[in-house]
Length: 472
Ligand code: GDG
Image (cartoon, rainbow, N blue to C red; front, side, top):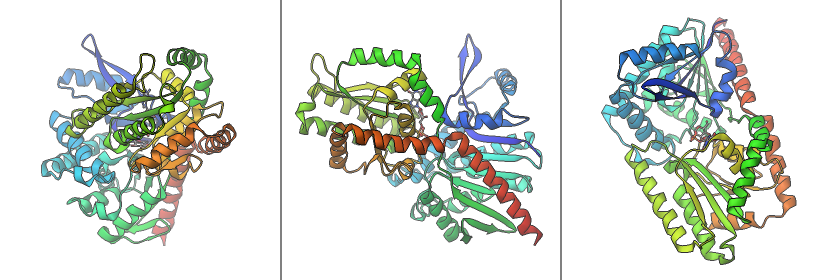
């Protein structure tokens, strides 16, 4: 059996410089944790971009050697790659298209050419490491062309693809001038995974209408190859969030934060800066709550963490300004000397503090306009070890399909979100506990390790079916 190669645009590290020397921090993200169980085994490796532009060839060589020690292999991007492939086609064409923000899509030939060029760059980097019988698991929308590029060079390899963001309706896909190449690129994989059944159906519909590939129970036949398409809703490292919530470190933060905040109900909002997350809409609903129910002044606060992301892209800069303005307006209208309605942080927090925020908050307000899955809501539920608390969740998040015991809302319906907050603030403790327990059972059962296992097991089954099919 060959080795497994994980491929994603970003390696699970952040690269910094200490006294002019490259310095890495391994990322503790969900994907890194889940796949850690694979890529750290045997000869397996992870291939991706370290996340920064590195000009000096000597520094690149140093980074290469250092990462090699950690079973990672870097793909270096030029400034033009970063601008046109990453910020351009990935984040200004595909991201808005796949999240249904058609008004934000930029159609730019230069971006597309860079996207092809960087997918080729990844393919070449993989070919240097791959053997013909390896398993290659490609992740996400930055690398949609890669499965087919790999298939041409390694016809017998086992190639899988998982998309972390939504896959939109055919009506959106057909808008993209490069729709055929994109779908053909994905179809180089043996197994194509999405978070939800709807994403899967949208993909199958586009593959049928644009490539003429019909399917039977999620199996498509392209040339002499069978391709399986299915939904694999991603989980979290449940145990990590549960045990952190009960740890002394988190509890110390909880005590400290509660003392600072005083006796009030806490709403929590955590996202990367992104227009798909519905942050301004959420602030407007909170504003409406304070306007409609003045008895909550001094009694309820919103803790809003916005993690800096893509802030070199114009749309994101504008969004940041809109959020700053809205928070300023709410706080200036309602603050008193001992109460601030919105505690707003434009930065990431260390894990123990994040765990404390999850554990101590009464309500998590997770209202994206679109989200592939959304892990924040699952992390909140896992951290509520006393089973008290309410999750308000957008119907547009992939997670809503599993978490039917959340208070589900349409994030575009301001009144509905305001009412949901009001109901959550007044929810009976027994009901809170019952709903939280049900959600915890779901998330605990299907955690990140189970997700990886189910996906890899399916990949094996697909290869067996293919062998059977080809021998007929
Ligand atoms: C994409 C898809 C899909 C947040 N603030 C802090 C912090 N975080 C961590 C959370 C969580 C992660 O960031 C965010 O994950 P999400 O899933 O919510 O969102 P995206 O980044 O948009 O992820 C999404 C996901 O891929 C996986 O497939 O669910 O739909 O868009 O894990 O904990 N971590 C720390 N400090 C913070 O302040 N340490």
